Image (cartoon, rainbow, N blue to C red; front, top):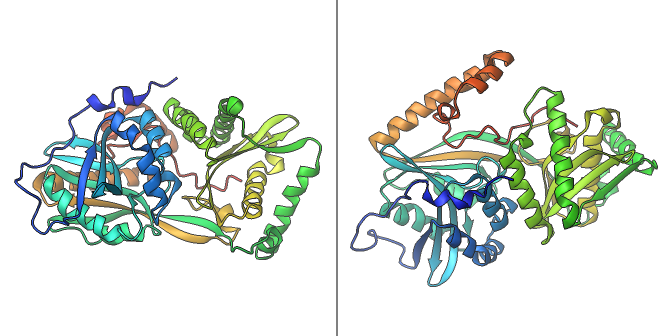
Length: 427
């Protein structure tokens, strides 16, 4: 079992401190005040207010739930820097950051990176502009140590945050580092399964119906895991299926790391009780053949990861179990089935709506920060050139030889177990 990161996380480095001032910055938003949570107990105590605020937010996303964030932090640790905005005594905003001290400044990055497909902050509906203005203009003005803020995987649906980022406060720069397509099948309230199929191509309809007819075979069965007693075992089966698939392609699987497995085991238990988890398990001849790991939250199904045993490739197990999950989403009245990040071909056979994730970097105009940003940008460009042109065997060897601390010069939050973009049509 992986050690709980919260046991030692608060002793890694000291968090950034506010400047010594006699009062708030000139022109501050009077009705908004801020509190910074840096301790495990403070983070844990936020569970109730966090849930209530997220439900009152216009961007209510499963990757922003307290269960996701706290489970992630327990697994991977980091220096907590959770900023809570209040109007009088009511929370109106939560900015969940991890801090890292750099030479001459402090860096903030959204908690959950790189495992969260959609990231952002939590803002009370109709208070977004007020809270964001107070944070970027007033709060950052009281913390001159903060020099770099990374906001990865911000979806276009998070419009208020994007608008604020693109208009940074005086003394700050902003740029977009990455863009990623995120396809989703969107359903109308009156959508039926047959109606959805009628809008697909003839070849896709044929493939879907052929796969689902396999459920009539006596040796084929799909079930949804709902028993907390057996959930750990089923999750382990899922990890094994996922890693088998990617090992067959000579690619590293996402779940090869103990910390990643610990995170998702912990998360699955927390998600099961409120009904956020759908773990679909396909069995053929009594053996695990495929699993689809899906989150059901706020009227959306989000497909996070899947896996299948290459021995059952002739059944098309990945496409089979995904089709079953989409049909269940339609039958249960959900509003969409989100394929999450990535552009694998099978996603586009469902005529999805395509949204875009953008990763933003904000940095303060100071010499230390600008040197750091320029150096890292150059290293990232060299790294991309290397990834696109170096032979596979050379890359594999260097991953084993180059220390992780050296790799973190390019990305200080990188992990050998970071969620990989599985772009090939694996279904």
